[in-house]
Image (cartoon, rainbow, N blue to C red; front, top):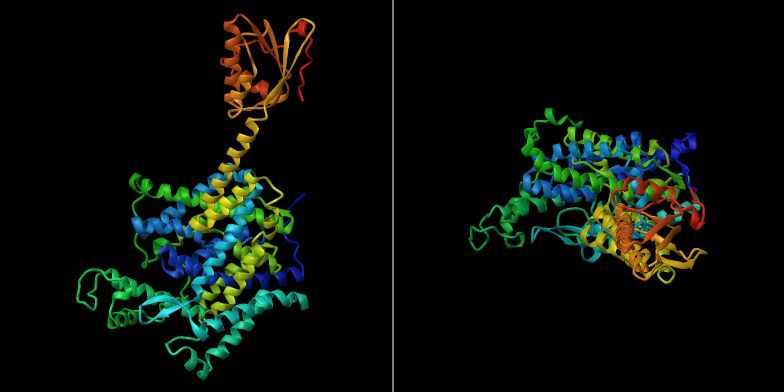
Amino acid sequence: MLQKSPESKYDATQIKNDVLSGLTVALALVPEAVAFAFIAGVDPVIGLYSAFFIGLITAVFGGRPGMISGATGAMAVVVIGLVAIHGIVYLFPTIILCGILQLLVGTARLGKLIRMVPHPVMLGFVNGLAIVIFLAQFGSFKGFDVATGTLQYLEGMQLAIMLGLVGLTMLIIWGLPKITKAIPSSLAAILIVTFLSIAINSTDEIKLSTHPAEGNVVATVGDMLFNNSKAKAVAAAASEGQPSAAGHGDAAAPNELSADEIAAAVATVDPASASIKAGLPQLYFLNDSLPPMPPMNWATLTIIFPFALTLCGVGLIESLMTLTLIDEITETRGQGNRECLGQGFANIVCGLFGGMGGCAMIGQSLINVNSGGRGRLSGIVAAVCLLLFVLFLSSWIEIIPMAALVGVMFMVVIGTFEWASLRLFRKIPLSDILVMILVAGYTVVMHDLATAVILGVVVSALVFAWQHATHIGSEVSYNEFGSKIHQVHGPLFFASAQSFKEIFDPRNDPDDVVIDFYYSRVYDQSGLEAINSLAERYDALGKRIHLTHLSPECRRLLDRADDLVEVNLSEDPQYHVATDRLG
């Protein structure tokens, strides 16, 4: 049985674990936040600010100590649609409204609905997410190609060095805990591989033989930022319809631009701007670099509400699913409703400071927990370190090799994927296997975690209803008065209502029929209507039916629907069927 997650009783060891794991998470958050900002079509610094506000506030007020929140791809996919259609001006009021909706969900205590997620859906979600995280790392194996003006996969010796450093990172993470646990293995791996990459990038012989183009042999966080900015500048130049080499005035694809045009577009990128360095975040209303917020009227509400509702659902589903996963790993129990409130408060503040919103991050949460971070301090340290990176340490963070961060995420993938689920294929029902594959497949193909979970729950519910629709039946007997007694077995609800009615034969039954519900339950209005329809059939033939052994729940349903069921529900003493079972 899971125990309620206690607020950490800090001692020196726990403080050390939380601080070091928080630092490790902060390092892993930088490329993720930047990448999601690019996906959403906003400035990378906005993604970093968002990760800071979401991470700090949920760490303090959320319902799951040790869980990490920040700017996520699931919400970025929704944001990109809003920005593309209506512009960035509508993003920030949408995030604020999303937070308000999440507060309402938490206040209504609807976080408990996560309990309705079946285990096959959870397995499919986790496995699909592991595959998504794995595939997302391939973007780090790209570099800027001067000839085409686009990001292309690495080749030759540069790719070999990248793969070697990724493998070294994974080996350190796997092997170091077997020697010592004094320092999180992920942090140690990042530091060791960073020093090694600095040595490689400073070796002229390697640079000349493997990487004649400008840039580092081992791509760093700074390279990733600069390369993305250059590719974005070239794409923008092409979309503006600049004349291509053939002299056409139509919009040209990046690879159709001339070398001079590509070089001109790249020259517009200021290396200083392709950096995570920035000042303190400002309130939206005081930030002159952001467009003015649209007027708060009905027209604005009709634009932002559908997106806010979607973001609310996506954020809470991913957060509550992450909470459940961390619960299982730590064998404790978080507070779902409190997490909804924490996420809502965080997104409101994030929107007020011009952020893109966010929710819980499974990958970073697993890094934190596996590195020993179990308390709120780990999330606070991660958020504060992220802000310090932006303010003071950007030059240090930008020299971290992408290979080290990719290796960390690959180990997260290995730890996230439920390998035991592969051994269950011959041991669980086919329907559960199909639900698991459906959720995982939809997650991988559509990159929409929330919809995948909802789809899995719906399919599981339909399968459950279909299976239990065939479980209703009755045993027939007669008492000394000649009354026919149907002892019903199985649930009576919308899927079994028709089968229930087919059990009875009013035309050939005796004048008095007793329906015994000792082994059955009436669950919904369809069940009530089935009883009502049956009563009308017997009544039309001048016959009576009696209902017995109704549970208290069934009685309450029938009492509220006495206009539907026109039969005498009390026991007739002459039948001596049984006394009512009230428990």
